[in-house]
Image (cartoon, rainbow, N blue to C red; front, side, top):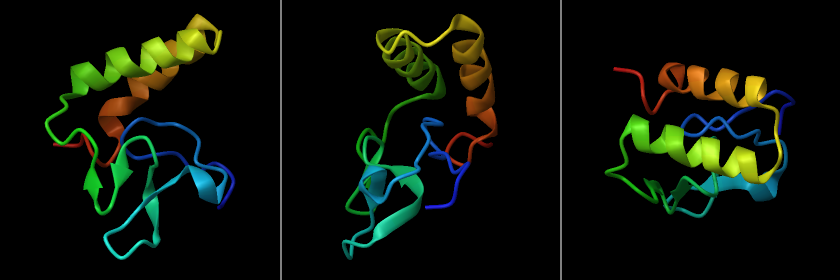
Length: 85
């Protein structure tokens, strides 16, 4: 995995192969993490951007990440491939 690579759905750093989602053929996804994407499809295909924002905030708060980092991450979500209109 290249440094600085982030899931194009939730913005989680994907810096280890075990964090990569999987394609239908079992290969590792180059774009999405294991928590968002498996077997070539999103785990929650009907999830809306606002729901992802809540999920990201909740998970980052559990990890005691600073509010400014959480706000920056949530603010970057609309620019990710999954959410671009």
